[in-house]
Length: 255
Image (cartoon, rainbow, N blue to C red; front, top):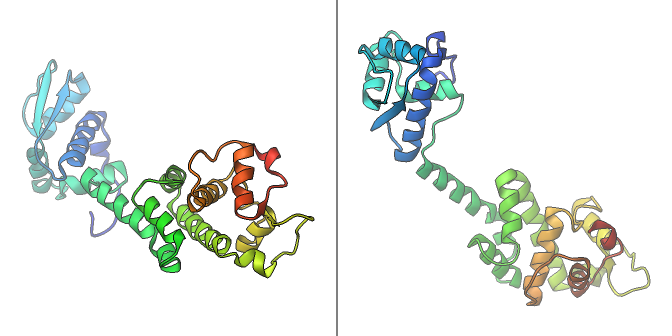
């Protein structure tokens, strides 16, 4: 099945009697990382007992706990007219690749590391690099914001981190204000947040403080400025933005 891609599961295995068995074996595989051990089913229903007894070639009890060897199920499948492995069958049955928890953790860890590859190249030997190192180590200002975004949308998390890295570089080096990009000073020292956001992304609302990118920016500013504490609350956000030379015209309407 695996070589030919996902294939429909035979109607035989769509009988209600297989559902609990396959779920139990999948859980066992996720825990152990291989097709071994036993699946335990309690109080089999009449239909379950009939279907599984026929499949296994032995009479199963209808009460108490029944132990079914995973290796036995795999052997029966391979020697049957279906000629497939248990792993391939379960992948088709649940319409997803079987992944052990250990492999899943490794995949997540690798994806998290990859998140920082492009930003790290951009900020070598800068203060922003120290902040990125803190985030990568799953600690420091902004970690929870980035982690939440990473869990829901990894592509968006990567894009956001690149944008905020560039934003912090500009702010920490004074490039944005020095070149007067946007030119909209509103009579005060600094640049309006929407103008700064538009210069980075083309979207004046990309760094709004109620967005993940905006909260991550505030966290980065707090780290670079050496001012620990929350980034929540209008006054705190206004203070952090002004430390970076950003004007917060609309912040009160966003909290």
